[in-house]
Image (tube, rainbow, N blue to C red; front, side):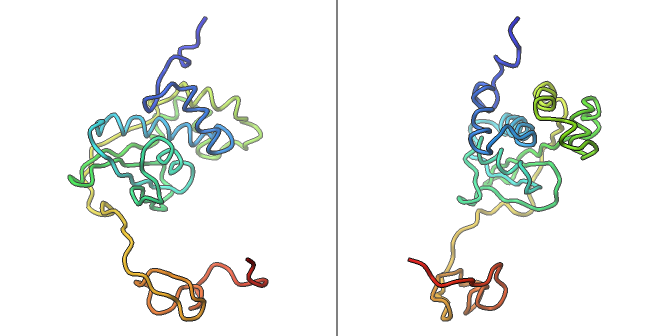
Length: 200
C-alpha cells in the first residue's frame, strides 16, 4: 500500500524533495524546520503566487531556515526580518501593500498530537522522542496544528538597504556610517578580542 505522504507536495515540490532539501541545508531533517515548511507552504498559499513576499519570523530557532529554504527571502537580501520573541510564527507579506498572513503553531491544536506538543513544549527529553518517532507525527499533523490570520504590518515592512560607509581609523575596516566614527569593536562593543597576529 502506498504511503499517502509520498505523493503530497509542499511549497510546490514533492514532499520527499523538500525533506532532502532540509537535510542538505540543516544536516538532518530537523523537526522545527519540517514544521516550518508547512507554515511557509500555507503562508505562500494565502498570500498568492503573484506577490513577491517579504517575511517576518518571530524566533531565531529553525523557522528562519524554513523561510530561507522555501522562499526567496533571506537575511542577506534583507527580505527576511527576525524578531527574537521565541514565538513559533511567521508572516509573509506584500511590502508595497503591507498586508499579508501570519501563520503560527497553535498549541491547542497541537494537543491532538501529544508527541509533537510534548516535543515543542520540551516536556520530553530528546533521547526519549527520537527523530524517527517524531518526524512521522509532524508529517501527519502538517497544517492541522497551525492557525493563520490576515494582518497589516505596522512596522518592519521596509527592506534594509545599505547606507553610508565609514572607515574605522583604528582598525582600517569598513563599517556602517550610522554607528559613528569608530566601529563597534574598536569602541569596545565587539563580540571578540584579538588572540593572535593577523594572517594572510
